[in-house]
Image (cartoon, rainbow, N blue to C red; front, side):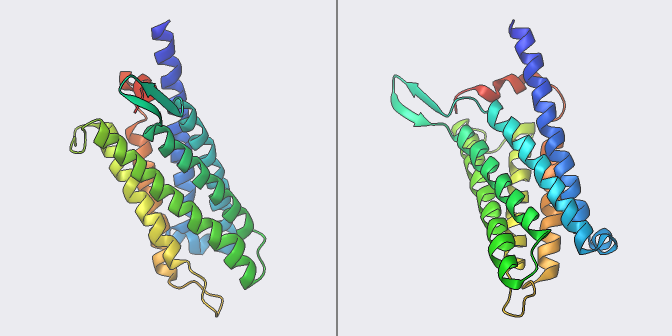
Length: 219
């Protein structure tokens, strides 16, 4: 039975990784300096919209793999686990990206772009940053703040860099009174770099391995 569980968890982890990798690829395509110009605004928005759904599916799988939300022990009362908080916050962030990317396909006014596109996008980026903070807390609790040979360590820090890049992108995307983004270059490159980081973070965990089953361990 334990062997079967490891295989099932490994298969689910691969699904999670592929979801993040496909979503990241679509975000990278939609924001790549040359490709996005060829796609046009509508094409890029469609790429973001589809990519956001792959992010959501992957984040939902990750939330399931994170295990129970709380844990109890003889030395501590009921507590919410950092690993679960990281996955849950990221899942909420992906839902906010679903809202913003969907709204981008239909927004026809500056007010709509500010309220329904940039607002959820900024909130989604903030959720990703918070999620990364909880992920770093997991490393701290596991005494792995410096473990460059660990795939989990590399994935966490590369993912954190991606969250920071998405945050920078949100700042560049602030809508000015004239109805334009505050810094289009910053917004595009922030999204592009963030997408590449998320792709790399997921790819690092793609290879099936025994530690995948440890994803449900209390942390």
